[in-house]
Image 1: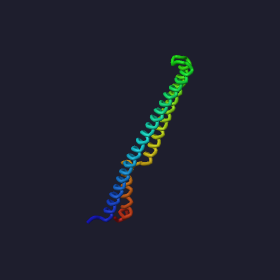
Image 2 (image 1 turned 135 degrees about the vertical axis):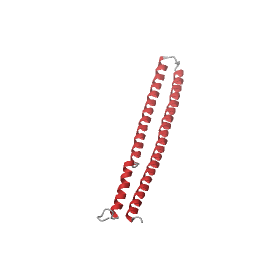
Image 3 (image 1 turned 45 degrees about the vertical axis):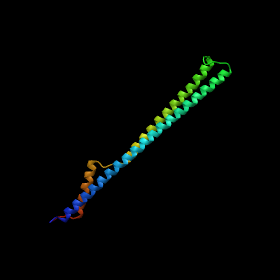
Image 4 (image 1 turned 120 degrees about the horizontal axis):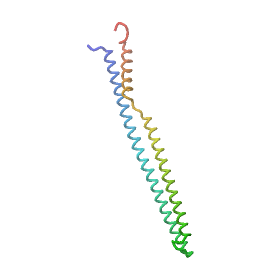
Length: 153
């Protein structure tokens, strides 16, 4: 016949093993969700930067068009030095704004990665050693509680 203490030890080890497996599965599911959410945020950041740059391009073409109309009304042509300086200033603003938009997007992506890493660190899963120790501790406690370690057993 089986020793009830051995049955208790086996059940405790099996129960803890199942719990550890559940922790691992939960950790994997959490990591998958965090990574998926991070990818969505990355796409949002890229889309926002692209939209801002597109809007800035439209504004630049509008400003250059307005500048040409104003220049033509003053009797200037596109080859005049005044027109070229005005166009250069508009293009400088455009390039500066695009660089700022790209830098902001880069900073947002770095922040997204840091947040993702932080959230993944919170979704820790037990290591093989940690899982083994949990199971062994559970079995040892069950053995002790059942009296396996008392003198005479």
